[in-house]
View: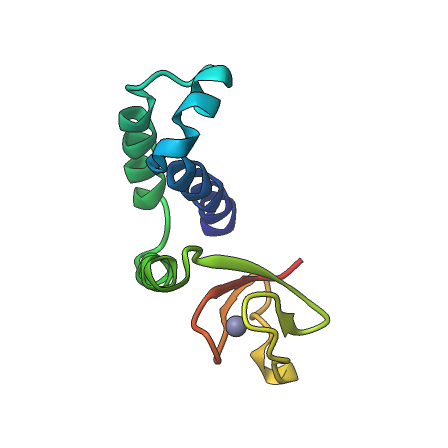
Length: 111
Ligand SMILES: [Zn+2]
C-alpha cells in the first residue's frame, strides 16, 4: 500500500522538520514529546520507507531535499506544489493514485 505509507511518511517528515528546529523544542515538550522522541521518529521513518516502492522513495527523497516536502496534492489537474496545470495524459493508471509532477518532480497524490 504505497499511497497510504507515503502519506504517513509525509506527515512524519513534517513532524521531524519541526522537531529539528530548536525553537520548537519548548512547544514539543508541551505537546508531550520527550527529547528522545526524535530517535523513535527516525526509527518509524525507516520502517515506513521500507514499505514504499523503491521508485517512489527516490523521487520522494529528492523532492523532500529540494523543496522541504516530497508529496503534494493536486486539484483540477493543477500541482499544488508548483501550480502548473498537467495534461490529461498525466493521470495515474487504473488502480493507482500517484504520479510525478513533470514540472517540479514532486509526487502528486490524486484524490
Ligand atoms: Zn509541480
